[in-house]
Amino acid sequence: MRERREAPRLTLRARFRADVVSDEPEKASNGDHCAGWTSDVSFGGLHLSSRRSLPLHSMIDLEVSCTHPAESLTIRGRVGWVREEADKMHAIGVFLDAAEKSDLVAWRRMLDRRGIS
Image (cartoon, rainbow, N blue to C red; front, side, top):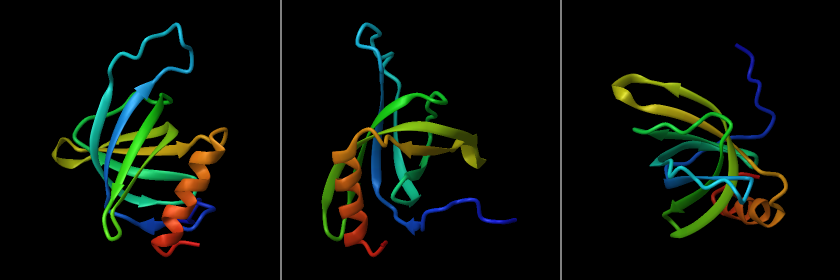
């Protein structure tokens, strides 16, 4: 199968917490969230693994906590796909929000420090 990804990927195992947020201030968040581990990442998105799922196409605030060197970052993204896997785990694809330029710059710097360029 041909690789469809355009950006280089980095295997990165980091803790994450994702909270669903609303694009519209009048709509309150329903409190959906999940936590788990990243599998691989790129400049434009992340592949997450969690026991809980997230609503497809929902906007999320994603806190990623890395080690070696230790650093944490919160970025905004949108859930692009969700797949149920073995042992009641969920694979979740998140596309980063291009409108959040400062998030993208900080994310790129974090990945640069980990060897992706």
